[in-house]
Length: 395
Image 1: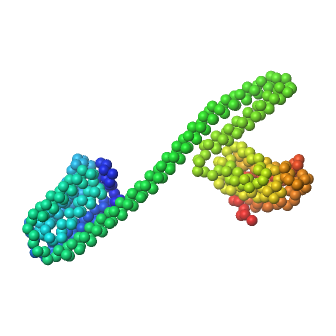
Image 2 (image 1 turned 120 degrees about the vertical axis):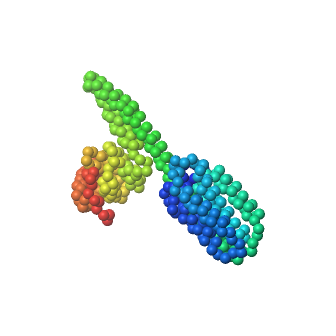
Image 3 (image 1 turned 30 degrees about the vertical axis):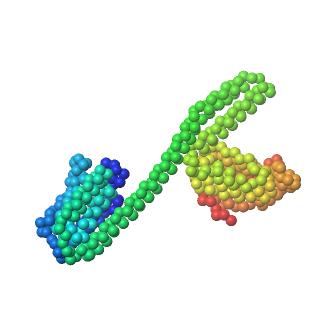
């Protein structure tokens, strides 16, 4: 009933007699109006043929108002339609008698204007309704024969109409509130994204460029410096600056991600949070841009590979790098600060079948897992294509 264009907020846009959902909007009011005119066929103690004809003609004129080209007419003319129907109710009441029970139908134009018209139009209809009631009160009182039947029918019809209108209005308000909350949430997200993009652009255009330029100057100075401690320190500084640029680029890429997206960095950090001692984790390249299948495959295999590290309380270093069309994962595990465990014994504990599961999981997905010895520990490495095979089911 309230699905079409409405002027509930007192605005002036649109017309209550046009737009989508017009039939559903008009049908309840039209049904009550037709019932009111049909009630004249009921026997009553007083009936005026001229007033009845005037009521029907005014009702048809109000109905014809829906066919007018309202987009080309002044807005103030819209109030003439409910006023015309108010006159129809006056003639109807005069035809049936002041005690016929038809007078309650005067609520139809009041409800219509309250739902779909502007405030000043409702004021006009209220004034017309008061005038109708005064005129009806001044007419002679006749003894009706069908007052109870009329009142029962009209009270039931208007009660249903008002209930449907009120519930439809509440539903419309609820949907508007939900839409408003969604728009506010989207606006907050866009604001955060705009700030993140601005920060990332400033870092990329200013900070990274300046550090890179300083590194080039130091590298040029190192090439002109004789070999010795000074040249070694300059080259070490260049390497540090290069590493800083890489870290900044990774941070910029992270800023450019949506805050609602759960990236690979967060997933790996959550997995490593269960290890003690805490491992050293490094990322390089756009690791958060990997596909969902690749991320899931990598996290599953990493979880499996870290099982022996967790069991033997080993120190570990994890390196995740997105390179070209693949992602490389490297785990270096050793005795480190493991309490009460000798380095050789701890290493031998890792050499056994502890990494058999991660090898099996990689083999099931067509991924080769390399396990090799390093000083005081083992090194486990594998490479997953960006279009990763489907991960094998967990054991």
